[in-house]
Image 1 (spheres, helix red, strand yellow):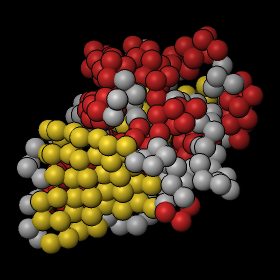
Image 2 (spheres, one colour):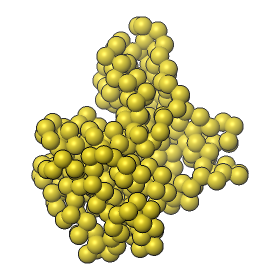
Image 3 (spheres, helix red, strand yellow):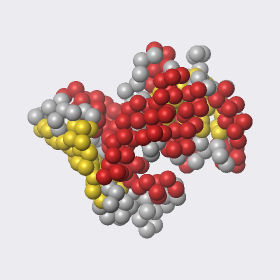
Image 4 (cartoon, helix red, strand yellow):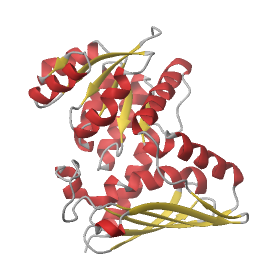
Length: 300
């Protein structure tokens, strides 16, 4: 690989425009090779804004993969999983968004494709790459001795007066907060408390889901996840309690563009060294398995 990692972007929606594209365009060690989008006008607008090439259609997707060392994805999760398989087969390292997929089969296929092609992968769970929260997760993991934890991720995407650009997302409407913000909570809890050994789920108001997890360390955690809370009820918190007292995750995640640049750096390191990243596609698969088990537990 050259000093400048050639990275293509798959996706041209709001999150790609807010985070992925500016991070790639402004990264000193990245050659931003182009943008592929299902809508040609969106791909062209985003590419023009950052001085790169727009690609559309099946031929364009193959061209982007052929011209790239790595591909960053910002498309609905089950579209992402299918395209990640193709990108890995083309020899591209994978910078995936969360969740990797919303079915275990699709997530497993992406993980298998990365392993077979021997490409590096990173899943952009924002908390794991934002400087303050990433440091906090590492510190609490090193401390150990945690007894229990509570995570609350309540958004107000669908509250009256909401102007969130993500409220129109069909997959979020269908899958709810369990799948949208659940990966954020799990990405911070699993490194600290260990893998989930049991999952119990219950429905709350609107799209809210309550989870109770037992972890490999013997600790337990509760999660409250949703996107349909009233505006005044929205908020994020994660609190651990254990032998050393109480630890609360820092407020705010910082600038997501900076966090994404860090994810790019860590993907480059994984690609160069061959050492898997702790937040790779296999970790993304495990998150999908946990959320799928929770979803199954909600069925009548």
